[in-house]
Image 1 (tube, rainbow, N blue to C red):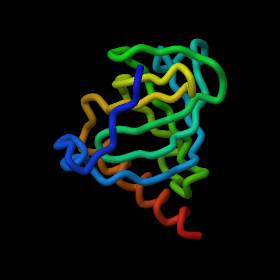
Image 2 (cartoon, rainbow, N blue to C red):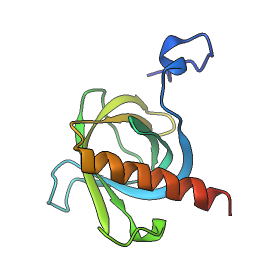
Image 3 (cartoon, rainbow, N blue to C red):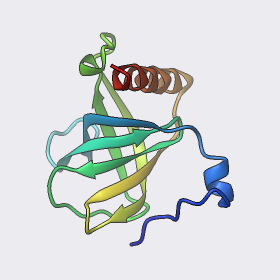
Length: 128
C-alpha cells in the first residue's frame, strides 16, 4: 500500500498535530497482557493523535487491525509509570519497508497527558 502524499496543500496534513521524530523502541501486542504475538518496532515519529513506526523484523499488518502499543518510559526519563500502554489502530502499512502509521483509540485524559510527556521527552532528548 502506498504511503500518503506529504503535500502542504493536503487538508489532512495542514490540520495534523505536530509530530516529533523519535527512535524509541516499543512493542505492538495483539493482546494487552499476553507476551506472545508481540512485535518490536521503532517509533519514527509521534504526535498527540498517532505515530509512525518501523518494525525490527518482517511482519504484516492491514489497515483497521488493532494492537496494544507498549512504550517503556524509563528510557525516556519518565519514572512513573514505568510503561505506557494504549489501544491503537493501523491506518496504513508499507510491506516493503515494514512501516506502519497508526492512531490512538479512546485515550483517557491521563493517557493524553502521558503522551504529551513522551513527546516533550523525545523533543528534549532529540536536542541533546
